Length: 192
Image (tube, rainbow, N blue to C red):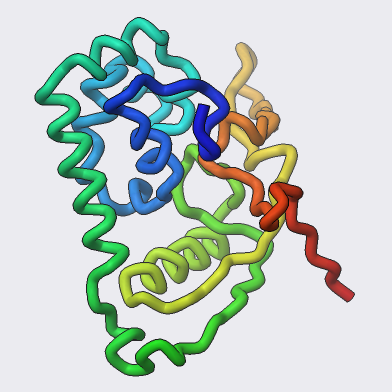
């Protein structure tokens, strides 16, 4: 078991948890083929790497841990992620190490459907702000709400009337982890 993921991942594929929690997959689709290869049916249904890691069998994880091509692609993607995080950025070039740290407060963030914390335009715009800040190297932290109920889904009943369904957000199935302090306790922030 590693600190990012409550399940034991086999040696050689532990970094799947790191990739699944890096929400860059919501706008960079470089790893889509890896996730599709790992669990094709689940990927087509949910397109949520975090949920794939929770749903896939241990046997399948052991298979890919023995697959040199899979491990090679995983290593390449992990290195690509690290290169992205360590690359010079616009903010770094403009401000050096003294760049400002920004708290971005918004009621919703639309990064991707597997993280249903938005219902429309405001959330999509806020999500785009986060994605752009990441690409520019801006030290921006999004502060919002973790809604228990996601945005509603519309369906029609047999008579043609609209039904509004409100799926429950189960935090463990979302690609998120709680922020923790040095002792491992959840960080809480008091807002006046």
